[in-house]
Image (cartoon, rainbow, N blue to C red; front, side, top):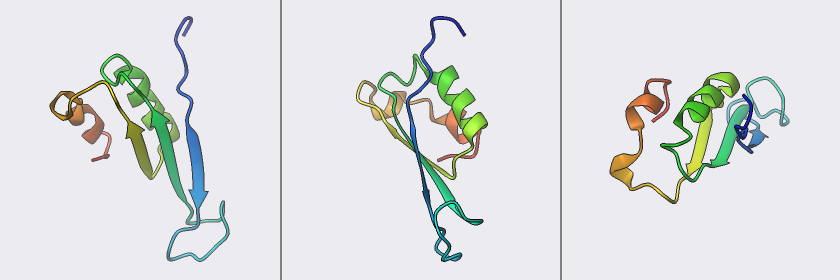
Length: 81
């Protein structure tokens, strides 16, 4: 998409507790972080990113929205809470 910024995220791999394996091994957990700042304006990008990357856990930092204005229903529809 022209003129749209792709989210800068960091995806960390950590061995799952039950696997005891090295990072990147089968059973590894994918944890993604995004300093989103403006979740309502970037909601479509966020939902696309979550579907495409499918992290086990997504940690979002949002400084501009109050808790009650975060679009929880859309995020929860993808299986995140």
